[in-house]
Length: 311
Ligand code: R5P
Image 1 (tube, rainbow, N blue to C red):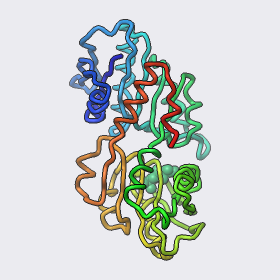
Image 2: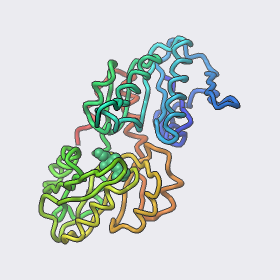
Image 3: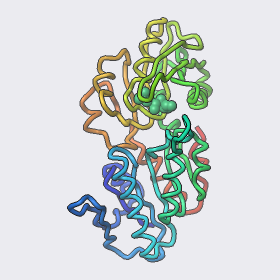
Image 4: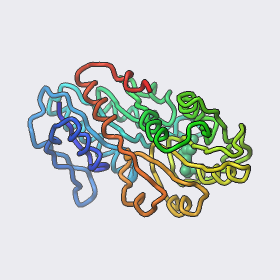
């Protein structure tokens, strides 16, 4: 097995390598003066089972292009099997036509990855599970749920917990955590007047005096979780904590979280945003490298990945 690290998340790739007790494969991945991507794999990978770790996070297009060029280099170097490991799959939110004459970019990106030569995809908490079907190659979608639930167990009085979905789309995620702890769920009735803005209309469920845990896949502008926290506190919640897999944290996200009623925001390191997150004590990062590393090991050994999700 070989692991190639793209530039998007070197700390995570290196942690995965440590978990698997293998050195990252030697490769030069750089830019020409005009920003074209140049890749040179510096060791023999002929016949190898190769995992390329690259989050298509900010700068999304550069990282995506880098991933495609790395895959092409590997294919032409006769790798036996290439797995695109996307700890964060950017473009996932463009998974349907929101209006006439708009693209389904998640499908386009999935096509690009398989056309470049990937044989499999491994990712974490896809925005919508059915995006797996956009790839015509085997796709494993890992859940951060087990990682979060271990932390929740350590941090909370489980008898006073409510799992909150910040929108209708996240109900399954909230219900999984709620049933794990015998907690109830609440649902935020969220409206998006326009892209990048969110408004809370109502809260469905009982939260008075409860410790609320918002579960979501992405914090981008942080509008969703901050508005939800405001509303939950307004109607009597005792505390609000957010557990979110991908800390995109763009624009004013950090200052919004700082000024919000959120007690704490817990994210994973699928996106290399440690510097941003460290600006704020309220943000805590839980590493995902063991889950990812273990899934890579199992894929390589052709053993069960789904049993990792039993929690
Ligand atoms: C939306 O469906 C996603 O699950 C997230 O709730 C959303 O992307 C978060 O975006 P923001 O932080 O900008 O509100």
